[in-house]
Amino acid sequence: DAKTTQPTSMDCAEGRAANLPCNHSTISGNEYVYWYRQIHSQGPQYIIHGLKNNETNEMASLIITEDRKSSTLILPHATLRDTAVYYCIVLETSGSRLTFGEGTQLTVNP
Amino acid sequence: ETGVTQTPRHLVMGMTNKKSLKCEQHLGHNAMYWYKQSAKKPLELMFVYNFKEQTENNSVPSRFSPECPNSSHLFLHLHTLQPEDSALYLCASSLGGNTEAFFGQGTRLTVV
Image 1 (cartoon, one colour):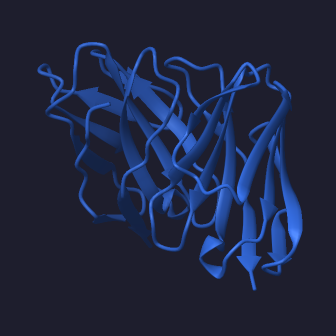
Image 2 (cartoon, each protein chain N blue to C red; image 1 turned 180 degrees about the horizontal axis):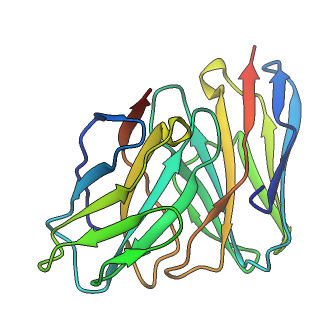
């Protein structure tokens, strides 16, 4: 599975959009981009995933660049409850194992 | 509530004890996983089961022994652990492939 690079930490004001970047320059054609988050001392929670096209669900939007070498997770209106570590993971379609890196600690401030 | 239930939520055990962690899911998933998360470290994948068969063991010491009696249940048997094994142990399940995984709330284990 391709490696990912994320900033260690980010801050965001409550009510504003949080844009979390992820670099995956070695991604291959059959690898999906997944995003999970982990609120302190809880199990990780699935957010969204995509292959080529941008995706949106009730939690977030995922923007994948045309060359697929990077992506951005967007939380449109961040709340204090969105404070968590956000993980960007690249995964083969035939694989079923998630490998977590360090992730980005997002802190939403009042 | 994710549909994946882990018990107990907290466990304190001595180094000579034997205990077991339990994970249960009724989501119809066929893949189940054990992860370990030590303080301020990323999650580490320990074991993977697909259709009750172990498909991955990431060089986990033999003092950790997994058991998957059916697709809905996963156990982690613990014996003669060390204090450095203290961590949050997380169970997850999925349909496999490129589907999302659902995690339990974890068992916070302290070895004294």
